[in-house]
Length: 157
Image 1: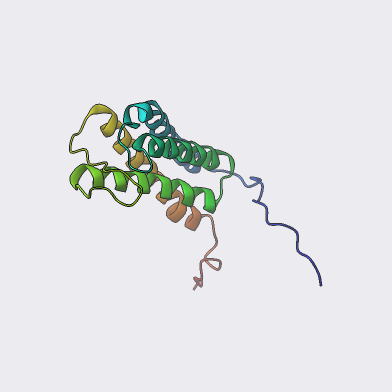
Image 2 (image 1 turned 135 degrees about the horizontal axis):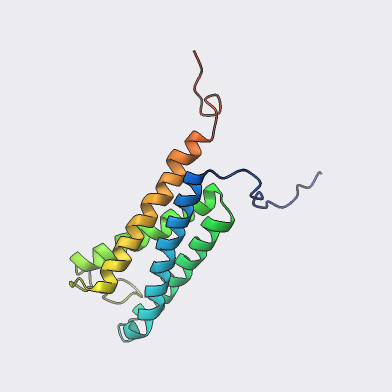
């Protein structure tokens, strides 16, 4: 039997357009803001706890956002862009759910209902929305433009 080499990400040898560069920088910046604010606020939310504290969840969000920011800048790949979109959109969805709905304790997760808007929450919401939008554009528009019509399954007439 023939063994296959392990899967590795492809190196970033392709040229990056100015539009792609701006989209990657904006996506990474939004994720970095998200990471910084969550990391800074985590200690204040350690008291909101069940099996897992909200502070721990904030630290996890900060770590995932920082990783996504790094990947979007360094790896420049569809999986990195998808991860950035998932982190941004997932964080924004949870922020909005716990802002508008009191779903109570959910398994090991504490009741994180907080029906207030304050500066840090607004900053995080905007950063997550912007990074989600730019990551989505990277996935849909930029990737589609970089391929030929034949690769997209289109035939030239």
